[in-house]
Image 1 (spheres, rainbow, N blue to C red):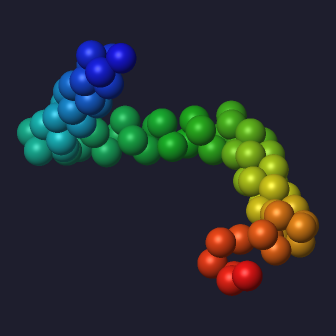
Image 2: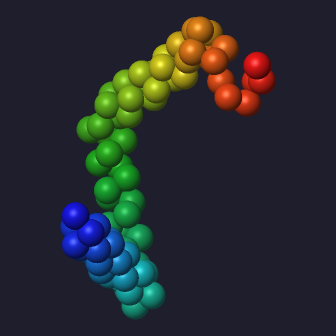
Amino acid sequence: MMNNKKSVFYVSLAFSLVLISLGAFIPDKLEAFSNYSLGFIYNNLGWFILGAVFIFFSFCMYLGFSKVWSYSAWRGQ
């Protein structure tokens, strides 16, 4: 189990170092790639982002107005 956590850390570290290196050595290419990726996400996945935010907001509103909120540990006894 611990070996799996270490591998996730090292993969994330390698990915981060690659992005930082690209930004340091060829910032124009990284900027173009980032702008293209952001445009793709907005144009093709905007409906998904909107749906996810709506579901998260609805869940927070449910927790805020339900009886679950009255049992919070920080509200006292």
